[in-house]
Amino acid sequence: MATITAGLTLSSEDLTSNGLVLSTSGNLKKAGYKRTNLDNTTGIARKSTTSTDQYTIFYADEFTADKAHKVYLKNTSVVASEYFLVTLDDEPMGRLYAGDFAFFPWSATDGVKAAFTVTFANDWAENDTAVFDGVTITLGGTETTAAMVDLVVAAKYPNFTVVETSSTVATFTAKDSNDLSLIEEGAASDDYVVTTAGSGTGTVARTVAPVASANDIKITPSVATTMTLEHAVLYEL
Image 1 (cartoon, rainbow, N blue to C red):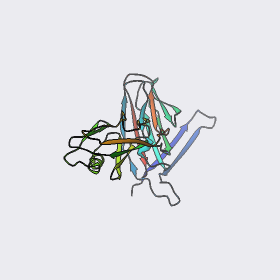
Image 2: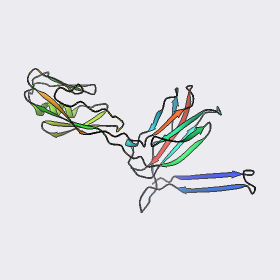
Image 3: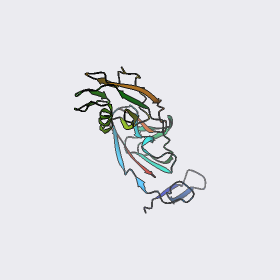
Image 4: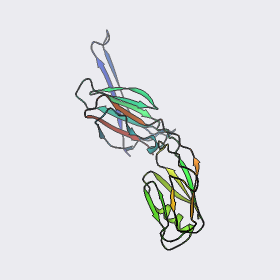
């Protein structure tokens, strides 16, 4: 099992009248009563920015909530005035100026992911289609609602996962809680488009309203020229 040791040393001969020496270190542990070593990491990576837009560095949805995660950030700039504004829980944590780094705990609290169902009914024919999230499903020769559901569930969608709730119902769930789109309801939904030669329908019903995760870690560069942030998460599953 991996062992990760973190340390911090603060020293100064002239900050206080007696000088300052503070040093501490310890092994990083998982959450819980019988704490074992933290043993997963995203690895050290770098994000280059080229505008003053806000960038999301880590999405809370991608990590288990309320564990003993630790986040490392470093501004690699050598221009003294350049900084990244670090935001957590939609609140500014502070600025990382050139050469500054941060190491802090992170709860990775989830948001609520949007979900909806599509109920397929009536008569379907060969070459009937269902279009959603940029993916087109085309029915072959089997003219049944169950066949259409099977095809819908087997498809890969960029922003949603889908499961078969019954032989006539497919349930879609957003991959990201920050996808706040509310899919239009009804058999004539502009979001989920069904085209049939017969009377086949795909009726949309919302089941879960989305709530954005405010616990994502975001940065806002101070300049539009290229800046680079070094980053990593040490996390538990």
